[in-house]
Amino acid sequence: MQQDNYLWIKRLALATLTSLFLLPALQAKWPLLPVGALDGYNPNTNAEKPDLQVDDLLAGNYQPRLEAYLDNRLGFRAWFIRLRNQVDFSFFGQVHTGDVLVGQHGVLYQGGPTESYLGRDYLGAEAITAHAQRVRGVQDMLAQRGTQLLYVLAPGKPGYLPEDLPAGVQAADRGPTNYTGFAEALPKAGVHVLDAAALFQRWKPTAPHPLFPRGGTHWSGYSTTLVADTLARAIEALTRLDLPNFTTSPGEITTKHLRGTDEDIARGLNLVIRPRPYPMAYPIVTFAPPTPHQQRPNTLLVGDSFTQSFYIFYPYFSNLFSDSSRFWYYNESVFWPENTPGESHYVRELNLRQQLAGRNLLIILSTEQNLNKRSFGLIDQLYNLYHADAPSQ
Image (cartoon, one colour):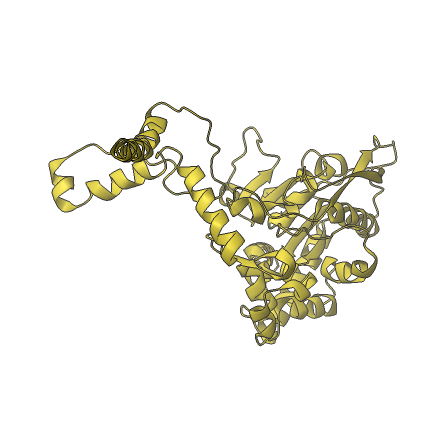
C-alpha cells in the first residue's frame, strides 16, 4: 500500500512538472486563457521572428534576436511577472519598475520629479534669470503681433506632498530648485505667470478631495477642474476675451473606477492587486455654447504631460479654444488634436512663423522636473525667429 501511494505521488509530481513546462508553450501557440498585457514600455513587443542564417548564428546575432522575439510571447508571462512583482511589493516593499519610489503611507512617486524637488537639476540663478529675460523679450515680440504669452508653472508631486516622501529622500540635502528660481525670476522679468504650484499650496489645507492621487504622478482629475477655472479667468484677463461659460458641480467619488492619469504609476507596477488609492473625486463639468459676444481664442499650447489633463479628464480644450488651436507635447509632437489632415505630426516639420501667425495666445506649461528644458527650446526658437526680423542698428 505504501509503495502504491509513493508511486501515485511520483506520478502526480511528474504530471505537475510536465504541465508547468507544457502549459506556457501551449498558451503561446494556442491561447487557452485571456492574459492581459503588461503596462509600460517593452522594447521586445514588436520584435520580429528572425530568419535562421548561418552567418548570424556564428556571429552571435541570431540568439539575442530570437530571445527578444520569444521574450514577450511566452505563455502566461504577464501572470508570472505580476505574481513576482506582487510578492516583492507586498512583503519587501520593492518595485521592479524603474523611476518609482514607494513613500510613506503607500504614496508613490517618480524618481525624476523627486530629483528636481531636491534641486539635483538646478540650472543656477544666472541661467534662470537670463532665460526669464528672454521669455519677456519673446512675450513683447509676440504682443506686437497680437499674441499674448502665459507661462504656467505646474506643481510637482514631491513638492506638494514632501511629508510622504521616502525617509531617505526626506533626510537628503535639498538645494536651490528650478521651480523657486523660475517662480521668482519670471514675474520679476515682467512675464505673465500663472503659478499653479503656489495655488496648490494655498488650496492644500482646505481641499476636500486629493489634488494629487496616491498612485499617480500628475495632478488629479479634481484638481484639474480647479486649475482650469483659474486658467480660464487668467486667459480672459490677459486677452480681454470673454470665453464660453462652464460650470462645475459635485460628481462621483470612487476608489474603484479611477480615470485618466489618476493611477498611472500604480498601473506601471504590474501587480496582481494594485495599492489602494485615495477616494478620488470627479466633478461634473458642463460647457455652455458660446454666446454671440464670447470667443474661443486661437491658442498654441506647448507643454509636458500635465497639459494633457485638460482633455483627458474633461474636454476643456475643445470647448474653450478654437478649432485651430494646437497642443505641442514637449515642443516635439502635435498631441491635440490627435489627427489633423494635411498637417505633420512632428513640430520640426512645421513652419514656426506660420504656426504662430494669427494666434491669440501662447501658453507654455511646465512642471518642475521640466523647467531645466528652458521652455522646451521654444523661447530660443521664437527669439531667433523674431530677432532676425528686427532692423539692424
